[in-house]
Length: 127
Image (cartoon, rainbow, N blue to C red; front, side, top):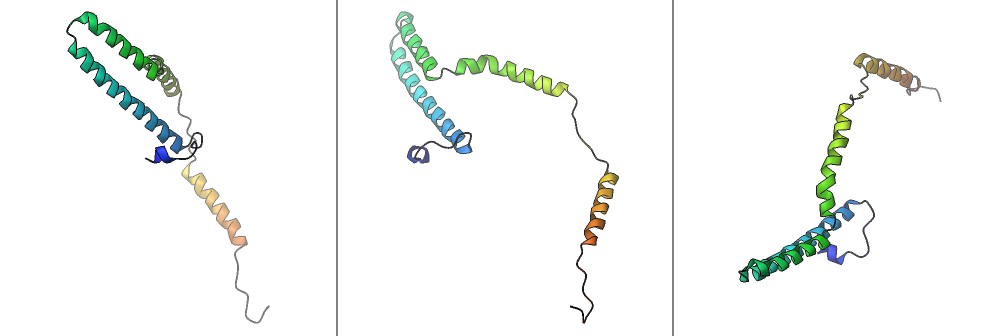
């Protein structure tokens, strides 16, 4: 409902844009499933395979036009992602671990320098 009443376009790369894109894709998918049900009911009435083939081919063309990016996503995306992941995992992890005693020594130095600026109470009778 909010998707339908939203004025304008959501900001680029925002979570709202992602949500709206998902809503649009789900609506297209539901429209596709409605059409598929109709095609199956029509094809089911014909008993001969000769009359069923054109309807099935037309529906497949409709699917390809409705979601043109599906074939590309199915074929190459997994291989490319696997290659990137394998390359990343093959490298040694670069973790900068500072020993605890060095961190404690740094903290002690900071505390000493901070105590120089500590406010001290003035003796009574001074301004």
